[in-house]
Image 1 (tube, helix red, strand yellow):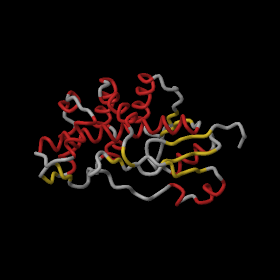
Image 2 (cartoon, helix red, strand yellow; image 1 turned 180 degrees about the horizontal axis):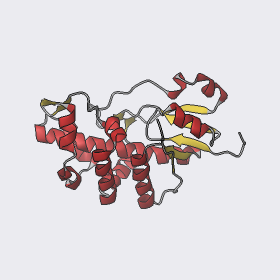
Image 3 (cartoon, one colour; image 1 turned 90 degrees about the horizontal axis):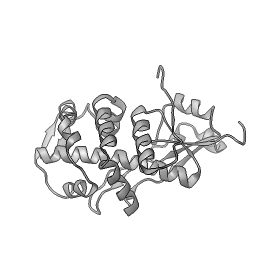
Image 4 (tube, one colour; image 1 turned 180 degrees about the vertical axis):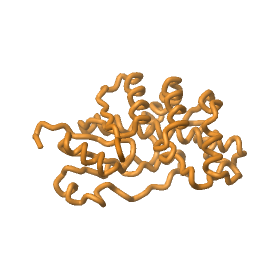
Length: 225
């Protein structure tokens, strides 16, 4: 390992496959991980955090400094974060990229929903595959979303149709927030964003172009795992 090797920030997830980690460690001096992202949309609503970390499986890498973890990406959204999320949600190219990934990318689907379980949509309990199929409808891609709209929906009881709009809007917000946090952490800590998710790579690349962020962005292609 050379002292001139760069340092990587894995995104958008707080865990990665061991093979991906091994490949990144061969290229970077260290690989950095965020904690699970538990957003708080309003003072009364939020997302439950998971406490697992990469270092639980690789304590030796933590001790050696090659695996760094503990970056906090939870809690209320700052005004700057909220504005950046809305810019993603209003970007037609970003939205089209997201919807295509929602229709085709199993990893993005699993990161946002659990298709094998039933989902609470409004007042109804809907089988996971049926709920996901409904959310794939192109009408959701064409519908306008904003963070405040999702926040408003989170505060009240919803009909089935409103529930679908809330789930789709929340998926947009979570995806965007994970990418905005990626840029913030990378810039603050002088890290290079890396991922093994083609969908998130494309979404982050679109945000970088629109926001004039640094274009540093590495995709690790998973083969055989």
